Length: 454
Image (cartoon, rainbow, N blue to C red; front, side, top):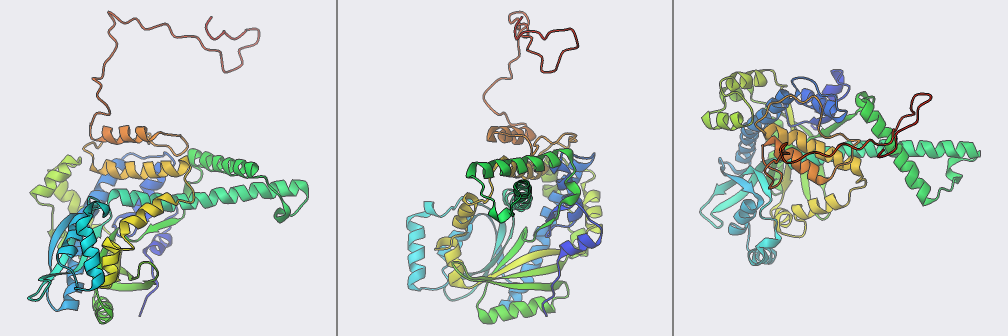
């Protein structure tokens, strides 16, 4: 039985009114979403930075444990043996593995492998990848048969996808406001809106006016409680290589698993063909509590601003107070479709590049949402735990990309340029007297404003 159920509905039922962005593969996703919604309107609260660091870093740590356990269970159910695995940090490692261990000797496979080996620079091999590859060892060729992988979305991809969800919502708000302006104009003219003929220049002006209205609401913080639940369900995912019979065993394994609920089965057809399974998974709380960060993990967390003396206690409390379930996606594809998605006609990286270049709305508001999400997540990796009383990226301010570069470098105390932080030498440099500029407010009665430089 397929159960229609979404974790976001639990948030709504709990009276969660301003979530904005809901990372369904994370625990403590409600307080994380509340921080995001506050920072969007520049209303940070004391403790936000520490809370962000705990939620993001501890989720990154525990997700590797629970998704690995689930992947091994499902893959063992298909193949009748436990798979072996290796960590992969770039897409090149994944692509190299399937090229060195091809699924078959078909003409198309030979063509793809030959092209990859001849032109490796065309395949985005250096793209970061945060995951693990699983394979079965066998006597016949290939001796290492790739059977699947797990991956955790990188911060850049989370920021990108999250900002796209937020921007889509804001774009609809802007368009609705622009339509309202056109409706007002039609009423003044005494004609139905559909008979209104609007010159392109005026359409642009009305859209920009509607955008300014929305920015004003964001700046005042009056829009925060109107934010909808914008879910991202695939921060953590599993990919499985399977034929039709094996797919049936995957479904049976998930349905029989005491910690899994199969929510939805979605078939994708077209340039890329696969089946997307949405699964609710009950986290193995006792196992996670027992998996306290070791010395290596504590050193990493220490660099990211955690106190190594208290991190074990913080971690335990984090797991003990976490929600019971997370949501993840399992993508099931056949061998040929998988090869095409990695080194063939539907290469995943090509699809991302195309997606980035075809945004329906790309004004400075959209850019700033991306900047803010990126900054917010990257700050979780930085050494500083300094409180933020004023969010450095405001949606209503225009920025150059250079500003974003400076802000992110500052998080890690990395210089922006080759300067030596020079300061004026009082003995040699006499600063010029500041010019008295023309007053921008009406002077008191009986007085006249100063000239620009009297």
